Length: 104
Image (cartoon, rainbow, N blue to C red; front, side):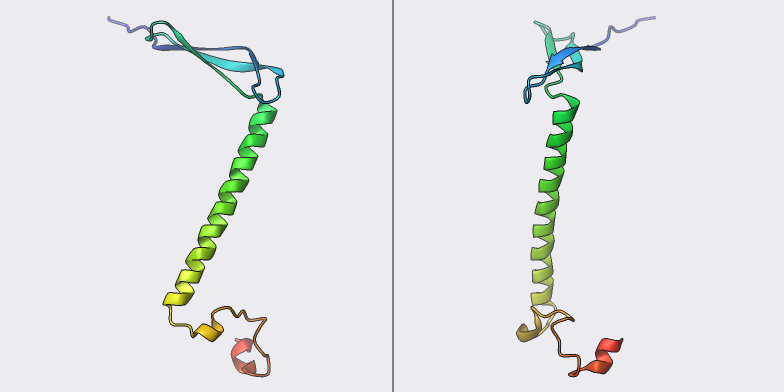
């Protein structure tokens, strides 16, 4: 039976965080098919990685909210709502003006 040798090897070693400089146990992957061998080390400690990922997620959520706001404005412009009512909300309307409609 012809068995192929593994193309990469993964182990846990002490790594240094590029963000805060602390030492931590991180994953090191060695690519065996490359000459010279290439090692890829974890570059961030778990705490710094969690902070970075939280910041990226918050930025992504801000971008999504901006896109949703632009899409809502586009929908309002294209759905035929008169321009004087496009920026209004239910709270802006005079309750005595259309009391029956607002009760629905």
